[in-house]
Image (tube, rainbow, N blue to C red; front, side):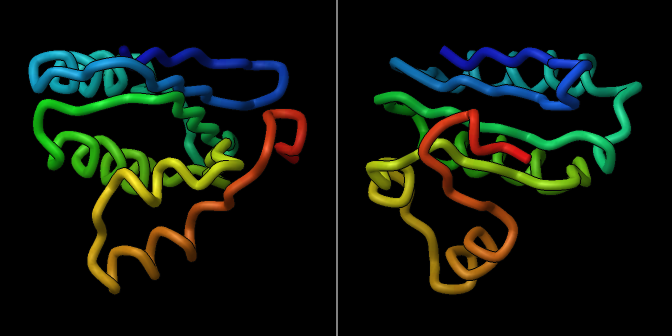
Amino acid sequence: MIKANIDETRQIVHIEVSGYISSREAKDFLNNYKQMTRELRGSKYSLVVEPYIFECEEDDDIKKICMSFFKSGYKRIYLIDSNNYIMDKVSLSKIEERMFNKHVKTIGSISEVR
């Protein structure tokens, strides 16, 4: 399951990821996400991604979703992942990992978002 909501008062786009994610569900999420954020100015919002234990049908699906987040131009991107689950789950090349760590700040809880 991938769920997204927008908190206008805190200027946060919050994404929750958990369970089994089929390729169809990933594609549907991307389409819905693009519609939802069409009028949103990413430079004024922070993106918070909160993954729980999840599994993807295709490993490239999660990379496609992450790339669409990077392209959206958010002010800041946060990953709530105190146990480093994402970095253990997603295999990235050295360059991808450097780019990921440069743009994404890993935090322990949503209360740490500035």
